[in-house]
Every structure is written in structure tokens, then in C-alpha cells.
Amino acid sequence: MAEEKSLLQQIREKELMISIKIDETRREAEEVIISARKEASEMIENSEREGKKTAQEYFEKEMERLRKEMEQLRNQSNQQAISVRAEGERNLPSAIDKIAKVVSME
Image (cartoon, rainbow, N blue to C red; front, side):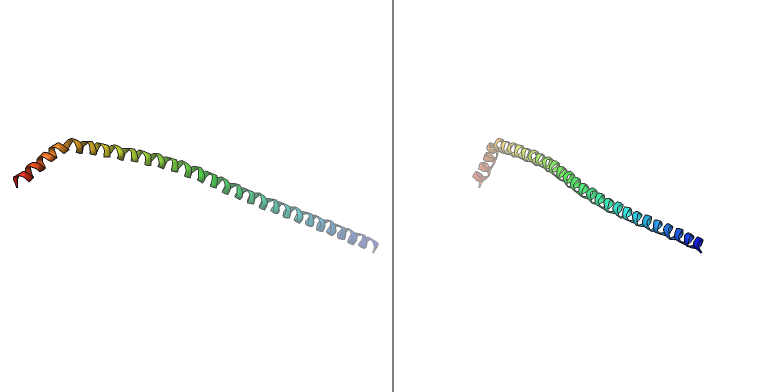
């Protein structure tokens, strides 16, 4: 009977050791999960921050490109207006003569 208790005692000790190892493994797994969640959260925050920064840089670059294009279009339209005005002023004497002839014929 003493041998059986000894064997039974050995089994209980093994069970206790296994139970302790299982608890330690669970604790380690929980720590790994917590750490992984924290790391994932930091990665998401970094990605969002980088994404916002990249989007802002792209926005500013495109706005500058559009400003330059608008300025170029403004300059072109000013040049066209000057050109049209100059051509109109060149044609003014001829137009005055034609109008005067038409009016004087009546």
C-alpha cells in the first residue's frame, strides 16, 4: 500500500507540475497576445500618421501645381486680351471708315 501511495503521490506531483506549467504557458501566451495587440495598435497608428502625412504632402504638391497652372492660364488669357485689343485698335480706323460710309449713304 505504501508503494501505491508513493506511486499515487508521484502522479499527483506530476499533475501539479503539469498544472503549474499550463498556468505559466497561459500567462506567457496572454503576455504575447497583449504585446502583439499593442504592437499592432502602434503599427496602425504609425500607418495612419504616415498616410496622413503622405496625403498632405501630395495635396500640397498638387495645389502648388494647380496654382502654377492657374497662373499660366491667367497669363495666357491676359496675353490674348492684349492681342485682341491691339488687333481691335489696328482695325478701328478701318471700321470707323466703313461705319461712316454706311451712315453717310443713308
